[in-house]
Image 1 (cartoon, rainbow, N blue to C red):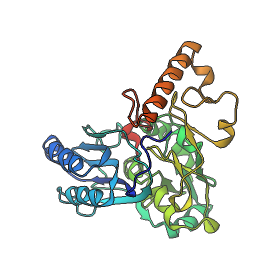
Image 2: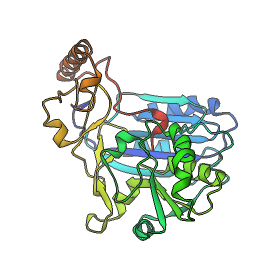
Image 3: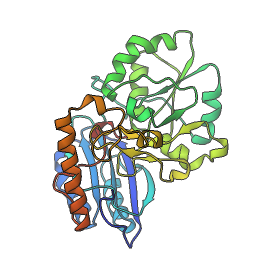
Image 4: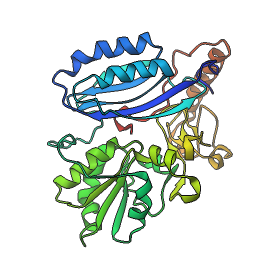
Amino acid sequence: MPLSPPSAVPLTVAALYKFARFADPVALRAPLLAVCAANAVKGTLLLAGEGINGTIAGPAPGIAKVLDHIRALPGCADLDVKCAGAAIMPFHRLKVRIKREIVTLGVEGIDPAASVGTYVDPRDWNALIADPDTVVIDTRNDYEVTAGTFAGAVDPQTVSFRDFPDWFRREGHALVAQGKRVAMFCTGGIRCEKSTAFLKQEGVDEVYHLKGGILRYLEEVPAEGSLWRGECFVFDERVSVGHGLSPGSHALCRACRRPVDPAGQASPLYEEGVSCPACHDERSDEQRAGYRERHRQERLAAARGMAHVGARQSQGPATDQG
C-alpha cells in the first residue's frame, strides 16, 4: 500500500554513505535536519564519529541541496551516492540519528578510512567472481539473500551484520585457507567497507569488494550479461529492485519485515499486513489479530490521504542499511 499518492513531481531516492572522521557528530545533526526539512526530504541518516550513512528521498532539487550540504562536511567531498526515481514517497518521516557506528559490526579497531579491500568496478566483477580461485561472500543478512544474490556466492546466513565476524572466525577462514582470494558484496557498498577492513585485520591479504555494491551493478550491467540472480532487497517501500533499478516483485511482510516473493504472496499463509509463510508459525492468533487491526487502520488513514500514526518504515535494522 503506498505511503502517499503518486507525486506530480518525480521523486529521487538517494542511498549514500561516507567513512570520514567527524570530531563532533552531534553538532552536525541539527543543521542536517534543517536542510532536509527545508527541502521536503525524508528518510533516515545516521551520523557517527566514523562518518554518515542512510537513504533519503524527495524532489530532485531538494536532494541536490542536501547532498551539497553533506559534501561540505569534513572528508565528504567524494561522497558515494546511488540515485533512483520513485513515483511515491518511500518514507514516512525524517530521522537523523547519532550512532556509535554508521553500520554496526561491533569489532574494535576497524577503520575503513585507513584500510579496506580493493574496489572492483561493476564491469570487472563478473570476471573476478567467475574465477575458480575466488571465494565470493554475500555479507548481507539472511532475509536479504532470499530475494537474490550472485551465482555461486557463499551465504553466511547471518541475522544481523554484527554476526558476520563470528561467522568468519568460525567458518570463513577455512574457505580461504588454501590461498584463495576473497570477493565480497553488499547492497550499496558500506558493509563491505567494514567487512573487508575486518578480513584484513584477520590476516586475509587478497580481499576485493564490489564498488557501489549490488545497486550500482544492477544499474550498470545489462541483464543479458549479468551473474546476478533474483532481485535486490532495499531498505524502503520499494522493497526490491531489479536490473536498471526497476521495481521488483517482492512485497514486505508487515509482521516480520521480511521480503515476500510472488510465490509467497500466493500462499494461503500470506495476508497483507498480517503474515507471510516465513513468520506465520512464529506469531500467535492474538498477534495476527493486532496486525490485522493495524493494517485496517492504515488503509482507512490512506483513504483519507493521511499517514497512520502507527505506520513504520519498511526497513530492517537501520545500521544494516547498505
